[in-house]
Figure 1: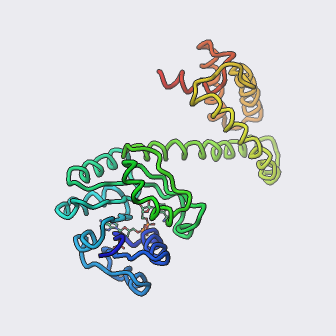
Figure 2 (figure 1 turned 60 degrees about the vertical axis):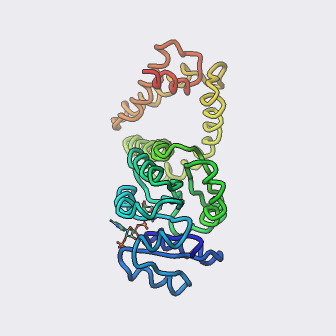
Length: 287
Ligand SMILES: NC(=O)c1ccc[n+]([C@@H]2O[C@H](COP(=O)([O-])OP(=O)(O)OC[C@H]3O[C@@H](n4cnc5c(N)ncnc54)[C@H](OP(=O)(O)O)[C@@H]3O)[C@@H](O)[C@H]2O)c1
C-alpha cells in the first residue's frame, strides 16, 4: 500500500507527486502515457499499470488531469474500486461537472474533496501556495496535512462541490476588472497624447489605493452596512461621470466607463444616493 495515489502526471500532477515523494510520502502513480511515469519511478514512486491498480494502492487518490469531465470518465469506468476511498480532485472544471463528480463519488461510497490549485507547478510545495478546497469538514481534517504539503496556505472554504467554479469566476472577474481598467486607461491616454510608459509608471500609485477599496468592500458588503460610507453613491456617480466625459472628449472608446457610470446612476435613481457604492450588490442581486 502507498499513502497516496496520483492519477495524471502532466505538468501539475508530476509536481504534486514529486512534492509528496520528497516530503516522505509513499506514492503510487498512473498516467495514460506511460513515459511520464519514468521520472517519478526514479524518484521512488510505484507505477500502477491501470487506474484500478492506482485506486487499490492507497486510501486517497489525487486526480489531476485535463478537466472534471475526464476525471468523471475515468472514475465511472472504475466505479467498482471507489468504495472506502477518498478522491481529491484537483483538475479544473465547471460547477455542474463538479456536482456530478461529487454525486458519483458519494453514490459509490467514496469520500471526496475538490480543489482549485491557485499556482503554477513550480510553486507546488511552497509555504505561500494556496489550494482552495471544498468537501466535508471531516474529510478535509483527515487529508489537510497532505494538502498543505502541496500548498502551505491551502484552505477549506465550504462543502458544496459546485461552489469553487463560482468562487473562481468571482475572483477572476475581480482581477480582470483591474486588467480591463488598465486597457481602457491606455485608450484614453493614447487619445490624449499621454505616453503609455508614463501611464504604466503611474499605475503603482493606483495599486496603493486598492487595500482601501478592499476595506470599503469588506466593511459594507458582508454585513450589508451601507450607511455613512466614506464616499457615497452620489460622489462615485459624479466622479465616474467626469471620467466618462473625458473619455468622450478625447474620442476614446468609452464602453467600460459608460458601464460604471450607468451602474452608479442606477443606484442613485433607486434612492441609494447616500449609501455606499457597494450597495449595488444588493440592488443588482435582487433584480
Ligand atoms: N499547469 C498549471 O499551471 C495549472 C495550474 C492550476 C491548475 N491546473 C490544472 O491541473 C490540471 C492538469 O493540468 P496540467 O498542467 O498538468 O496539464 P497537462 O500538462 O496538459 O497534462 C494533462 C494531463 O491529463 C491527462 N489526460 C488528459 N486527458 C485524459 C484522459 N481522457 N484520460 C486520462 N488522462 C488524460 C494527460 O495524460 P497524457 O500524458 O497521457 O496526455 C496528462 O497527464 C488541469 O485541470 C489544469 O487546469 C494546472
